[in-house]
Image (cartoon, rainbow, N blue to C red):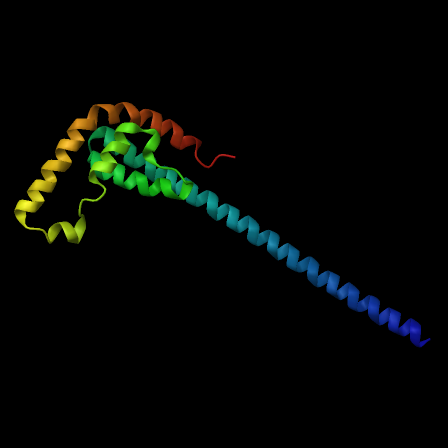
Length: 147
């Protein structure tokens, strides 16, 4: 009789543990779905930002130097770079170490003018090729994150 009682208690405990494990697996599945959804939303936002910047570069609403700097940072989460776009990558290489924001404002006027001249000449040098690369870039942005 005691053996049956212990067996029933053991089965109840095993059943409760199985129910608990099942609920944990359900929670894990919900969390995984939420994480996947958040990743897809992030990919969507990054792609939208890249499209906006690239189109602004095409329209002249964003300087080419600023555009390549911003696009480079947006490509990082995808493990990509602008290296497959020679003109954009060359412009990035020319301007990526230039001071920005507060560092730029802290420079003397002569230094700022020299940096501006260097940046503008690099933009002019690569502008035509970049305009040819931007449509291909936009097409490839659409493919990012697709499974």
